[in-house]
Every structure is written in structure tokens, then in C-alpha cells.
Image 1 (cartoon, rainbow, N blue to C red):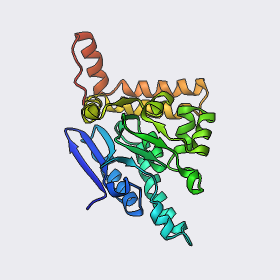
Image 2 (cartoon, one colour):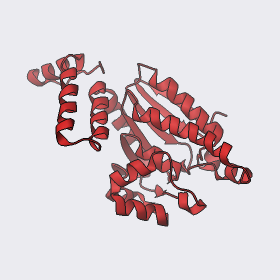
Image 3 (cartoon, rainbow, N blue to C red):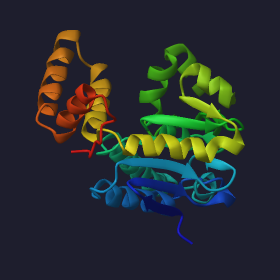
Length: 260
């Protein structure tokens, strides 16, 4: 059985971590499948939005602790292989040519936190729980966690969550800015689908450039940032979506963006 399942429907791709028995823990094999799947997705010009979720009661419980235990006398090779898959996948998420959504269907821990925070938007079911978990097994975080967590919640809260492994409810994660929205379980799938389809009908290039601007802003002064903004908005002026967007605005109709 594949540990990563991909479905594509009308421009929306859904990538599902598919090892519910381990709460979708990122093993060497799952990490490799995930990275390979992302290679295929970013190369597919038909995709306009990506949803990442999990099978069963967990989004992802983090790294494969059983594998680390099995190799505990010489864990480096196994850990490096997991990192190759995880960091390769996250890197592709951060540069994906379409917007990305984490559909957090349950437990999120360790590497699952980094993965969820690396997406553009995150929607959580109201029963989801979140914990960093890393220091509980004597390691520091990975998977982009130490980049995103302090930016989302602040340095003091980030250190608290990392040092204490405090478990957050979905509502607490919402209050801290880790997720954008919390949805009751019976409405979760429909809410995620609605959001993904809305993004898939949007101006894809504008979304991707907006992500790049926001991500780059943390290392820029305001003058450098305005230069970057000017460069991107001028580039947008020659796109089909800009032409359609201003036409629809003036003609008082809904735009029909094509992502080009």
C-alpha cells in the first residue's frame, strides 16, 4: 500500500499521508514517497491548488520514532534519510507554483508541525491537537519548525512550546496563529474543499508572488521590500490574469482567472 496517495480533480491536488497505523509518522519510505510525489505535483501545470492531509486520526505524528529506536546504536543514517525526504518535500512546498493548504485532520506532532506550518494556509478539525514533541525524545526541531513557529507565535511562546511540549487544542492553535480556521468534524471536508476550489480558480501567479514577498519580507528593510513589490506588480501587469481582473472589475462581473 502506498504511504502517500495523490488525487487530482479539476485543478485541486490532494496529497494524503497514508499510514494511519503509525498516525502517519514520517518514515524513510514515506519521506521518499512524499518527496517524489511533490516532484510530480510541482511539474504538473494543470494544478492550481494543493491540499495536504492525513488518513485516519492523525495528520502526522512526526518522525518514525520506532525506526530511530531500532537503529538507536547508529541512528544517523536513518535520521538523514528521513530528513532528506522531509526537507525535500518542505522545500518544494515553499516554492510550489500554486497555493498550498494543510488540512489538519487530527494529531499533529514533531515533523508534522513543520509540515503544517510550511503551507500557505491551514484548516484544522476541532478535535485536532498540536505538540512540538522533539525535546521529549532529546532532539531539537526540524522540518522548518524553528523558522515558522517564532514568526507565527513569537519567540517566547515558540520556546515554551519547544521546551515544554505543551499540547495545544485546535482553538489554542487558532488563537496563537498556527492555523487559520477551526472547523467542526462534520463540516471539515466540505470547508477544505471549498477553500481549495476557491484558490484553484484564483490568480495563481499572484498568489505565488505574494508568498515570495511575504517570506522575503523578514530579511528586508522596507525600502528593499518596496523594490521587490514593485518588481512583482510590474511583472503581473503583463499577465492574462491581470487583464482579466481589471476587465472584470470595470465590467462588474466575476473574473475568470486562468492562472497565467
